[in-house]
Image 1 (tube, rainbow, N blue to C red):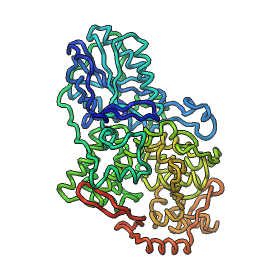
Image 2 (spheres, rainbow, N blue to C red):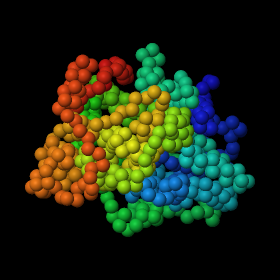
Image 3 (cartoon, rainbow, N blue to C red):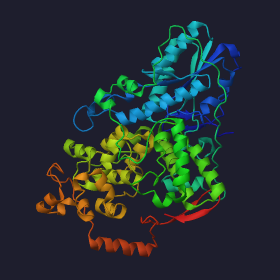
Image 4 (cartoon, rainbow, N blue to C red):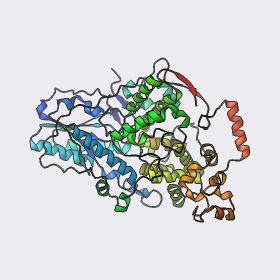
Length: 576
């Protein structure tokens, strides 16, 4: 239809239309074709376009494949020697994130086996694994042709892997091919958008105004069902050996984690149980729909508790849950209880996720460069001590340290917290923003390359020309969102004996008072990296400005910013 293929010219590759792939040549005999489904960040059966390709139904045999690519678990310096020393000398994937992923892979294998299929798991690169499997299948005589299908990934490294797979296939002289699809990784299908991704409207509000257009809003496609049956796995002669994944601890050791690292689990102070897998994702979705969705907009800036936010992002990051599944679950809630600003707001966040994915497609590797998409040269520091203290939660600013420790010990941090610590690193410490992005990549259970690096590049003020840089005052943020210092005291017990005012700013307390409150001399180790302040005069000016702008406070007590019109499925809302 003229928009069946969306070209992202700046990235150098093409997005096939969602769920509309067709074989151009005449269809092969069913008995001669084996299909491999190369699973990546799509570890689910529900709403997974790969299982709905025509070729799957036509294939004599089918084998889903997952590769624990060693490059994802090595050091950042394996990719860039610049990070071999000092700040940035850590692995791309931390043990908590790896555990969550391993759980997701094991769960996917179990689900496929229930359907009479299987998941072939390898500890090797995709280009090695897929070629070896294709060779083994063709050698066995099980097929005359092997077709590999995969969901396209849009970041620079992931696109390079796809290129490498195509290269080894081409050099092999075997009857094997790789075909990619955009799949269901976004709320909106690229071919349904009224613009090419290379011309994505910016900033986010411009994009949102297009997809929420009053005259012609973009529709969210329906979910794809869980397949009821799948072709059996093929015979393989002399191919690679599949890895056992039922024991997550063994998987982690094979990924290179030490016995001590393997023992690390999510800190019990975490209010949620994060376990990878599609069933666990659907369970969490139901829990939040029943316990938190009706008040989401009011509580989403919280820090404590299990349901102030959906906390679905870890499962979405590795593909145990699709954004469309979340959207249509919200829709069913609205059909039963009515649409509200709170229910709309969860789908609003899914649109942010789409925006960053399309933003990454538009700007390609520029989202990883020091100068960002705007190619703006700023002076950044790479002081190892300052970065290490930020990373470990030892800056001496308790609000920052509480967030960084929660991340370090649980793999999770609230959205408000992420904005604050990113601002602290880039605007107060002036450290290279990529260090923060890389640490988040290492530590976050929900690391999503587009959302993570997209958010960081905007925090650094490099996302788009003329953008407003959100510089957050840590003292103000603590007072507004953790007024009683409950969150601070949970994660920074060193200041638990201080009154809230001083738990936020222990540098204002005398040595004698610190001693009486039990604040150890070891906190912080050295002078605070920065001493944020929020005076009574500043507070008064903020309140006056809010009154002039008509800002209100949510039911949970959080301040609201400038309001704009938003359009949901059935209603419109004036909200911040």
